Figure 1 (tube, rainbow, N blue to C red):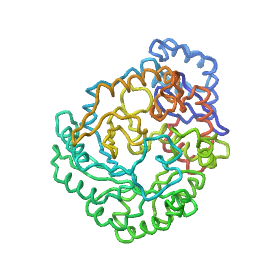
Figure 2 (tube, one colour; figure 1 turned 90 degrees about the horizontal axis):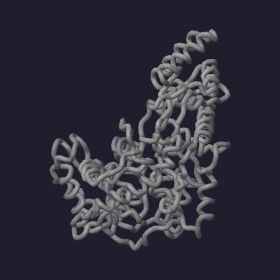
Figure 3 (cartoon, rainbow, N blue to C red; figure 1 turned 180 degrees about the vertical axis):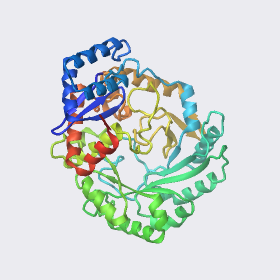
Figure 4 (tube, one colour; figure 1 turned 30 degrees about the vertical axis):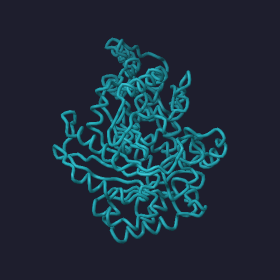
Length: 497
């Protein structure tokens, strides 16, 4: 996998796959380096690095051609620091999981997420459990108290074992639904129970919740008292929020907006530190309008989420595409403001140095070996317990991926089956990953690939060299047009040469 030169109207950039970095190149040097790369004069050794002999030959040739001495110094710097080396992907993805990894992951996981109920007091058009999607039948099931306590005890025991490497850390218990506030009494009981658990090495339990916000005004005193982090779903102003509706079809905006205002006024410090607003992009909104509205109303920048695009029923695909395609989140770059904003953020979080990672999704690693794709290994980030007592690694990957059960409070996780399931998928997709230019910056969960069980896996995030070059060129061109983004990528985050 060779280095790539990105050329825009004004600038040149060098992308080094082995370094996972972009370098901003001075224009004349960028043109010079681009010509050298096109000539194919870089002979790589078995380690895919520029050989010492080849390095000396290159430097002698450009010296004889009376090249600018500064260019020679820059070439030495690039070669010595492997920016012109190729990435050998053949051995990069040779990691696979073993049963011991699952045990270790549970002992070091950051969160237990409890689906307290399948019931909800809204009927959002795009709901991941709605009519658009294939999923388990929603039967208004409720998580049993003994099963919730069972998983808490199980994970706390692992956290207190010698397998845990954590100290002075938080084990988060997350309340999820449906709408979790429909079971507020259960939340109170679980907070009281878990609050009495003793964790070793200075670790302790904390709480988070995702809610539609309709009942939040009734119970906010309790959540403030127990320092609960809360994510409230709000897609922008009343017009933007048109797809978040009651079961009678009426808008939920007014009540949620008023509740947020009440909390902001009553508990301003808590609101600033503990309340997060999540907005889903769809046909009725766009990034700039939603961000401006939330910022003006609550002095917050919302988290922007995309619609779930996998597991859509064939019967509803056309209708779903209308909701999706109006804001063109999946389309190309030209004149697509929503797509541009998302891909600009994607570029910054993937290829620049000074950034904050998205929560629980893209954890950086110094490891030289990876498992294929960006799929989390089982329970690496969390354990998710469904209302009917099934155990999954995440609430985002669909109801078919069951890794265990809780029966009468007893936790049963099939580690052997889990290892076989994951490694089989990794083995099948690895040949595709080895050819992909996003191999070390992948954001594709294998469980979000619809064709993962077909004979030939097709990854929607796959990019060959040409596709990668086009994607990055369009991304950087878009950011160069924005004074703020252009300043960011050139002055702060992208290395300069």
